[in-house]
Image (cartoon, rainbow, N blue to C red; front, side, top):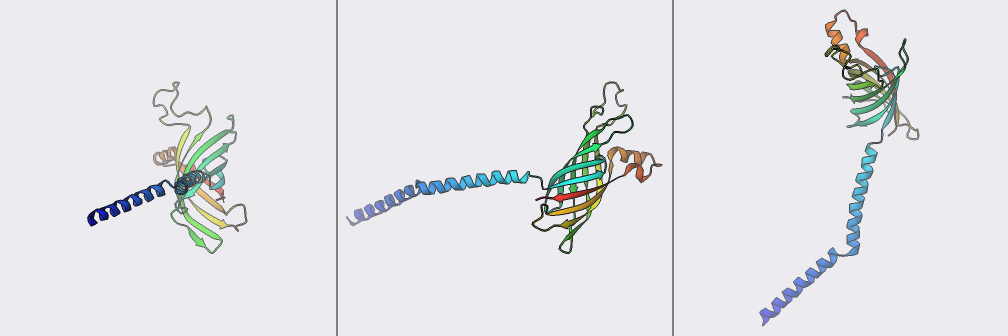
Amino acid sequence: MKKFHFNIIILLIACLYTLNASATTNDPIIENAKTDTLQSKYVRRYTSFWQSIIPRYTKIQYAGSMGIISVGTGWNYGHNHWETDLWLGYVPKYTDKHAMITFTLKQHYIPWNIDLGKKFRLSPLTCGIFINTLLDRDFWITEPDRYPKGYYGFSTRIRSHIFLGQKITFKLQPNKPHKSISLYYDISTCDLYLISAFTNHYLKPKDYLSLGFGLQFQIL
């Protein structure tokens, strides 16, 4: 008999525990909390994605194999060691040709950033690659049929470049519209110029190197 009562007590305890667990699981407040948590995670993920694609800075550059004047925007990341730019450049009319627009994708690597007091930061070396194209029908990626096959052997529309440079940054006050302003320069050359430099020893550096100067306005 005692054993029977003991079994009944154990069974009731088990039932109460099961009912309590079920009530807890189906509690609307807890369910709403779970839903809110999932929704919050989704909103944070969604917001973070859109924030990550907002450009962090704008740039303006004079010369440098992208046009006589170029404007760009981009993103810095990796503790400010990497930058990715998108550019539009303007090539003015020369002789009998019309003015043209260029589009450039540029990737920077900045190994070191050295603080010079509270206001200035020096990047003693910037380097990277960029690819640009002329947005003009007079230039082509593959040779037109009017030329013998292999006559040129290269694209007249797309060029690949490498560059080296330096940058100095002036940090602005928090209430200013920009976080900082940077002055930089690049020395670059393209694939076609490099081939010409190696195969034509009479060429001088000024014949295959290009110098560009620019300003970078950090927004975020």
